[in-house]
Structure formats: C-alpha cells, structure tokens
Length: 628
Image 1 (cartoon, helix red, strand yellow):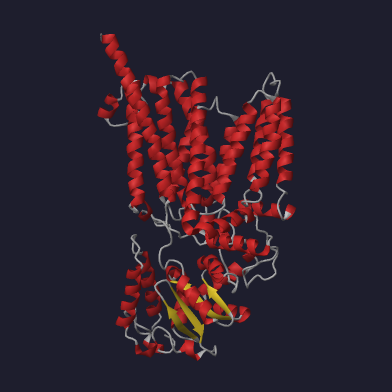
Image 2 (cartoon, rainbow, N blue to C red; image 1 turned 180 degrees about the horizontal axis):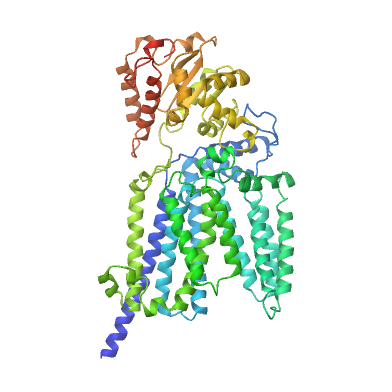
C-alpha cells in the first residue's frame, strides 16, 4: 500500500511539474508578446515605408538619393529594399495594425525557434553528461523559459518594425543549419545544408538587411572551429571533408551575397555598420544612442541590466563546462559579444547566439557536477522554507516552474502598466498605434497645404516621418538613414541646432525658409528655438500640441505672417485652453509625455524673453510681438 501511495505521489508530482513547466513557458511568451505591444514611436519605420512606396511606384530600386535636398544626386544603395517592399504592401492593406502584427509575429517566431533550439541543446547536453532523467525535463523546460525572459528583456529596446528583426531570424537559422550540418553523419545531407540551404538563406538576407555579411562570418567561424579539430591526436577521420565542405560553403555564401540589385557595391555597407559607426568613435555613434556602447554608462535601462545578466550567465556556463564547451560556441559567443559591446543596437545578435549556448553548456555543467542531485542548487541560494520545500527532485521540479511562472506574470503586469518603461524612459510605451501628436503630422500637413517656397529645416528624428508624410513632394534636410548624410551634413545639422550663426549659414546654403520642430525635441535644440523665439527674422506661423512651424519674416506671404497663433490679440488663456482641449480630444492613456514636451517648448521659448525669466510658459515674448 505504501509503495503504491509513493508511486502515485511521484506520478502526481510529475504531472504537476509538467503542467507548471508548460505554464512557465506560456508566461515567458506572454512577456515576449507584451514587450512587442508598444506604441508607434519609431520614426525610422516611416522612411522604410516611403522607400517601399518609391519602389512600387518606379518599378525598381533607387540608385540616387530620392528623399533629401541636402544630398541630391548622391549614389544611394538600399539593401533593405525587399523588406521595404513588403512593408509598403502590408501597410497599404492593413495600416499600422498590420505592421504591428508583423513585428509581433516575427519576434514570437524567433523566440519560439530559439526556445526549441535551446531546449533541444539542453536535453542533448544533459543526456551526454548522464543527467537526462525523465524528472528533469520540467526543470529544463522551466530553465529555458527563464532564460527566454531574460533574453527578451535584453532585446526589447530593438522590438521595432525594422528589417533587423528579420536578420535575427536569419542569423538563428544560419546557426541552426550549421549545427545540424556538422552534427549529421551523412556527407550528402551535410553538403545539401552547406551548399544549398545556407547560400539560399544568404541570398535572401542580402536583400533584406545591411548586416547580411554576418552569415559568411558565422561560416568562417565554423571553419576555424573545424581547423582546431586538426590539433587533436588522432585527427578525426572526417575533419578534412568537413573543412572542405565549409570552405565551399563560405565561397558560395559570399557569391550569394552578390545576388542583390547593387551587386558588389552593397558589400561595403555591412562593414561600415559593423565597424565604422560603432563604439562611440564616429560622429554618428556619438550622436545616435543606439550606436553607443551599452556599458558606456549612458542611459542604463532594464535592457542593459538584462544584457549584463545574460552575459554573466553565459560566461559562467561556459566556464563551468570549460572541458566540454564546443569551439564553435566559444567563437560565436565571442564574436557576437564583441558586436554587442560596440553598440547597444547589437545586443539582440548576442542574445540570439547566447540563448542556446547558455542552455547547452549550463545543462551540461549542472548534469556533470550533479548540483541538482546532490546539493539542491539553485534552491540552496533561496529562502530556507523554500529550500526545504524543494528538498526532493520531484518537488524541485514543481517549485522551479512555479517560480518562473510567477515571475513571468509579474514582469508582464509591469510592462502592461508602463512601470517597466518608466524606470528609464526610452520612448517605448505600452499600447497599439500612434500616440496622438507624437509625430508632427498636423504641422507636416500645414506646411504641405501652405505650399511654402524654399526648403524646411527640421529635427533629425522627424525626418523619416516627413519623408512619408510629404510623399516625395518635398525633400528633407536629414533623417534616420545614415549613409546619405556622412559627408558633412550631420555635422552641419548638429552645428545648426547649437549655434544660430551656423543655422543662418545653413539657411543661406540650402535656401531654407521654414523650420518645423516637434515639441518632444525642444530641449535638444534649445539654442535654435530660443533664437527663433526672439523674432530675429523668424515668425511663428503654426502651433499645435505636437510641433511648431516658423517662417522667415522676409518671405512674401503676408497672410501667413500675420495669422500666427499669437496674432489678433489672442490671450494666453485662449491659447492654453485651445491646446488643452485638443489634447483631451485625442487622449493618451500613458504618462503625460505630450504635456511635458509642450511645456519644454514653452519653457525654451519664454526663456528667450529678455528680462522675463519667470515668463508664463504660454505667454508670447513681449519683447517682439511680431516675432511671437
């Protein structure tokens, strides 16, 4: 009877462990989905959409700069053309909700693929080490779910509608195919994978995203790992064949990279992205946050903390399994870590590579050292009653997935309540669609409808949106694309927003007659906006809750010059009430970022009033009523 009760108890605990581990996996993917559900705040998606629209309209890819008046005729290479084409079609069919579904679907697919690959790697490693007991399956599944949540938090800053999310998938596919090819005992199957499948992936990658040369680099790392096998004694019999197959694969992959509309000319872009603009060594990397090193101390977010934790766990797993770690794992982890440490935008590259490496080496180390069997680790590190409750393997298999499930739910609630994003704001907020007045859509329509002569100066962040909003009828000064603006234009822009004299020089050089500036970028252009507010040749002609538009006072458009927001004797109370009413008509249920941005605009404007440091934020500068 006691034996039967013991058997039944173990079966019940095993069943509970299995159910809870499935719930842990569900909680992990719920967190990933929650991190994908953010408001549209990324401006780069708009120039990608405009690029796709251009390709559809012209029936081919652009060869010269199509959108900027500061770089007309410049040679232009758009490696992302295939992604942009699909994005344009999808946006036309379903708008922003369709793009959001695409992003969520791709990211969930990536993490599902990584989870399956990591779980398979962990199971295989534990089996080789002699620890693949049936009761440990729930623990491995729960551990994989926990690592998945950590990787998702590390990557979440890059959960945007950009072609790089396709690169993550393709990189994961290349690593998986390489691993399968080197594991198979069939030479024919190995050659199919290396000589057909990988070159096909590479040809697709070369038409989707600029980091496509990572594919051949991974093959080269596999070739180095194979070369290291020749140091063994005796040399494995299949080592020469595998090395030759990889060498042919590397050649085919490099040739496949040429299968794009620009041919060999496209090959320079990946090297510039990977080495030219990373690490804070160039003007681009010093200006744009995503190109800065993650450990530079600038903008330490929960993603950076998660990245450091993922790095530490991966290093620990490799150290504990030093004798059994694969050479390819070490090389791939080192290469992707180098890229991640150069720029925070590359953190997902490390996460994609590290997740299965961590699980494989962690499982092998745990099984080899017998931590779970002999010491109850990692429960030894937890609160005493929990450690006692988890004294047996079966009970640990219940407790660990329960803890992972609870953690996943807590983190998801944290994301859905915006508390996660408020820790260190990075312009990501929970929800769907655009934030009303976040983009300068109303100001863009005003400029377009007013048919202003000359060119418009604007913020770098607004450039991508304006490309799409104006539909090619008006050029932009600068936007989130780096390549067209490397020959001095970015430097000119930064000087113009910091120095009124440099701004006026840019005005003369590019025949600029208007300035469109979003309120959420007011502080970064404080000297320029203060100069415009003083009315020294510029007049505020449009003001809405999202942006302002200034016009040169000598432009022969008296109707616009005399019809600004402060014209006609409007009181400050009327202006305030009008802006407040419009914000209420289009509410945003997140933090008051629009109100803060509007306040920053008025604070800069009123600080420019001579002798009026305490000027009400919505009061026009009395020192120059016409300039107001």
